[in-house]
Image (cartoon, rainbow over all chains, first blue to last red; front, side, top):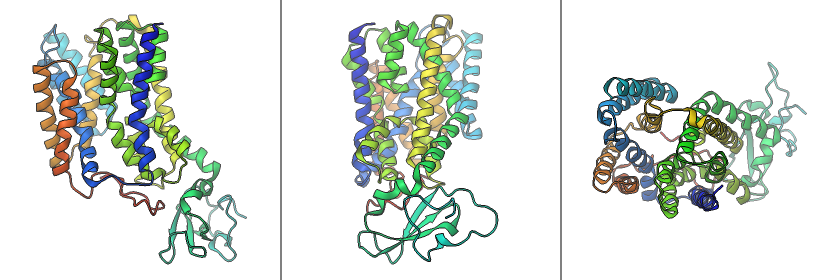
Length: 106
Length: 326
């Protein structure tokens, strides 16, 4: 086991805890300013979009381009999630379509 | 004394709690809420409060408030309530998110082996980092030999969303000690947060429910990761079977269920454009920080003032549950 790696993991865990604990402790009896609340309300949407979109649109290297295989699958996931409300159903449907398109086009 | 009287609080003479319960035998009362009578917060000695059972009104009690109600809330529920709520949280997690977390964990474990982690290192990473999304993001960086500081910074950025969840959960836990809060903080995950806010919007909030759902989430992730790590090399090519697509798929599914209002579409649209532009121009993982933190600023102007998120409970009255998020 590489000790440098463990140290890195420990640091990652420490900054993760730093995102979880402070506000839970501070805000159990207090409130945030309203504009900060609105910023936080938008944060998960912006963050998840920024994480997901480039993965399904930009080229991954090797095989068919992502926008031909992953983008249609991503649209399927979104439609399934909105229609069924089931995370697992939506993700499974998207994975099957992505794998099929990659096999056909790749 | 009937089984549904709360522990630790003797029923006041002549209160509703001393009445016989008519009709069918009630379930054990586990969900206590309170409301003040005469507008007093329980700091004035002699101000009366109703301790109300949300399931069966007849066993509600009127008590004299001698100390802030927030400090006696745990004993009102009692250990039985804690157990039942914790199991409810775990059960709700098991029937909804746990299967996909295990599947996720298996995929992550397999990818981690391919990124060059040993089984021990993989387990250590799960135990130390405790954040699935960050662990996913870290794998390609580990594989490409990214410097440690970049891994730590990226982890922090990816986990920034926990600030939001912590801020919106905090008012529900107003009566807990700092030590308990510090421990509960570990349980903040996308899944436990989603389950808990959904539950607290319908039922009186109990921290044990959150703890139960978080524990189930963690166990599912550990089991999945370990299985994936053992199978590791035998998952030939995740790309070919579309397994790498699980990652963006979950985010998109959560987004699709979250985005309703126009301002949310605007935030997502701007975040998408900025992320694609930055990723195309700079590469790496900077697009997550730039688009995530930048596009959120739109929320300051566009998000409605009243429904930013569920932390609407005034701190002075922790007995009130915050309004549901949407």
